Length: 308
Image (cartoon, rainbow, N blue to C red; front, side, top):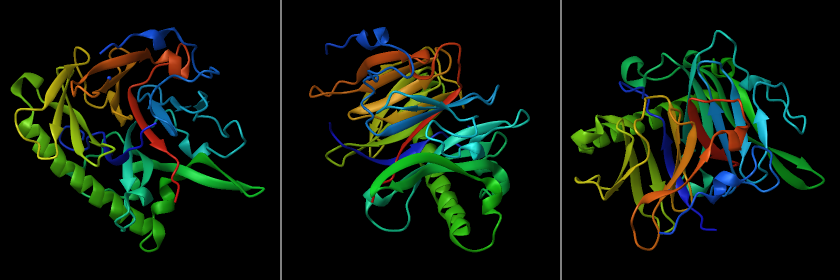
C-alpha cells in the first residue's frame, strides 16, 4: 500500500464551530468485528465515532476489524480506557490534533484526539485551557517480551491543570495548531463557491509525492478539492451527499484521498482520484458495518499509533 503523511486533520473549531470502475461490493461484507476487515485503505488507523446526543463512543480498528466501546472501563486486552468515558451530562465535540513536537520530521508528528466541550470555540474563546476539553487521547506503547504493541488511552483534562512541564507545553502546541487551522479555514471559506452554501469542514491531504491538497466540504454536501495555493476555481468537485451539517461529519485521509462520514446518511464514503486525476465517490459503507447494528454517531475522527 502507498503511504502518506497527514499534515493536518480538522473538524473546524471557530465561528463555524470550528472515493473508473468502482462498485459497492464492500457493502456486502460482514459487520463490526468481521474476520475480513473492510477495504478502507487506511492501514494502521483507528476510527473513533462519537454521538453527542447519547455520548456513545466506538473505536473501530481497521487492521483487526474490531470495535471497542470506549464507554467501557477496559479494552479487550485489559488496558484502561476509563478516561474516555463521557458522563450523561457531558456534551462534546471530537477533534484530531496533529502534534508537532518541534522538529522538522513529519514522521515524528503524533495524532491525538481531543474531546472539546461542545460550547468551546477558538474564534470566540481564544486559547483552549484544560477546562475546555474532557480528555486527550492517543496511542500508548506497551512492551511485552521485547514486543511493542500500541493501545488507545486517554488523559483526563485535569492532568493539564498545571503551569509548567510537559502537559503545559502540550497545551501551547495545541493552541498553535488551532490557530493554524483557523487561518486555513478562513482561506477556504473565501475560496469555496457560493453554491456550497458555506464551508462545513475541511481536511489536509499530503500525497505520496509530498503534494498538498485540501478537501473542503460544502454545506451542500459537495466536496471541493484545492491545491496548496487554494486557487479558485477548485481543481474538482464531487457530490457526496445532499447536505453537510456542522459538527455532524468526519474526514480522514486514505491512500489516495479521504473517507467522509455523513451523519445524515449514517455512511462512510471514500472519495479519491487515480491515474486519470478525476475525483469521485469510490465506495461507501453503512456505519453499522464498522461499529455494529443499532448504533449511531454524529462525528468521526481517525488516528494511528505513533512510531518513531
